[in-house]
Image 1: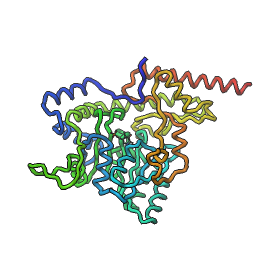
Image 2: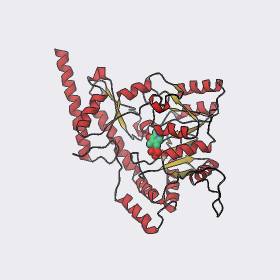
Image 3: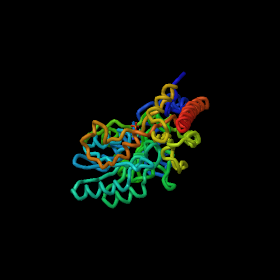
Image 4: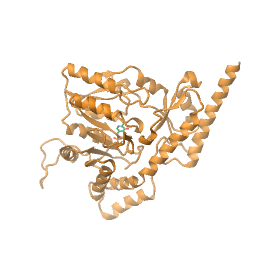
Length: 386
Ligand SMILES: *Cc1c(COP(=O)(O)O)cnc(C)c1O
């Protein structure tokens, strides 16, 4: 019995052909026509003027911050509920990440908490050039309010949309939201190049700056001339070919992820204390990962017990991101928290959500989960009678 993955890569013959085509054309690496085409098509899809293909989403965050001059002495507020890459990228620049509490319903950065943080930092005379909200599990952050608050305090917004390609906020596509945004094409994301990322902006000088820093800060002259420290962060042409084939299939992949969420919602509908996290407005959500929230007092079991039951059947599941303010590596960094993200971390469980899940795999997940819930309901009823 093979393990059913949370979010495995969704590959077809088209991706294989794209790689072979790149081989045939001689454009293996580093750059080439597939990179240009991939950038053009992603920019077009989300409505941005410029896109720069990079080696990872983390690289895109790093260079996006550097393009705005973020560095030592600066403070960059970000969501505490995120993957380490967001906070790491801030740390790479020498700036201090400031962890902002999550909204209890969606787990997104709480705009009121951000307002408090920015007002406090302004009072202290801190330099806050940027805010990095995260589109948690593929649902867009509260950009309308976050942009207003950040801009009023003189900060730009770099949207970590690593998980939200295909999502939108009031009709505006993820990638277009924020003053600049990034995508990840890591193996477990909505679509993948096996490893890769993208920086998106409408500002020509920012795009040029990111491109320059990503290619070893090489000056535009025939010999190798360098006036500053650069990075080797570009995406290879071979992988961009995979990205183009994935992009052709993106809408189908999004549909399958949304259908998974519907199926989970139907399964847990009758079970007290178990809900689908971030439910509602799914059409604007990429549904990258579907998570269940378990209130142990009402459900009769904890998220941990559910994880163990699914794990025993070879079904991969995982707690929500452990908040950054609880991570040993960031223990000394400033934060404004009230226990919300910690509670979400304790009660949330991501369940298989990938678009590559087969019909048999979906059936197996649904039947194992359905039986687990039914057994607990039966037990609760017996207890009520006794
Ligand atoms: C995956 C992810 C990243 C990092 O992307 P990589 O391409 O793996 O470097 C950054 N932020 C969030 C929220 C992510 O989920």
